[in-house]
Length: 265
Image (cartoon, rainbow, N blue to C red; front, side, top):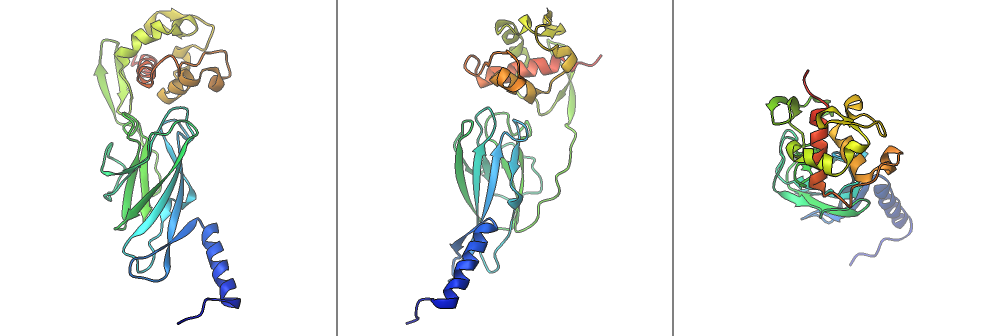
């Protein structure tokens, strides 16, 4: 019967354990082995750097322990946005963040400021997509890749694919990532009183109390954030509509404003 570790060996073991924690790893048993394997910890912030985005920590590359048949990653997910988001990891490896839905493990829907830890065990090295499963958010760009046992490719700036669409509003260049129904957003612009403060030619609004939407041409995430939180985001007296309009109505309104301020002349 072996004796418990003591003296210098105990000190070495304590130092090794502490170093694993500093590096962003925990330890967990590897099947068929007596020694523990590291559990990679990845911090995920939803809603940053923009509302429809995820920001992962520097540990986004998860190493594969030598001799292990599986490796485990703990994703510590925090919602840093102004809307509710979730986080899902697809369990089949791929080559690109191209899916808007998949089989995998997901957190609950997290309100602003809420957190949850998602533990995923991977059986194969590869690139795994992560995404939001809130309707429309993955299509809006809220997704990416994490490398498990291999390094993910460098992030590249991509130009959204556009299609020319003729609607009841006008002929516009509509990004494939647009979220919401612009035609449904038109009456919301009127009923919410947006025209009493903003200029928007498509709606026949010419008020100068607030910024001209025709002149500023805001992006859809900017519109969503401003409508949701009002003056707390814009630094103005604009009211917040989070308790008045549903997320779907806000998306529709933002789609309407975006499309009517990005028309083809």
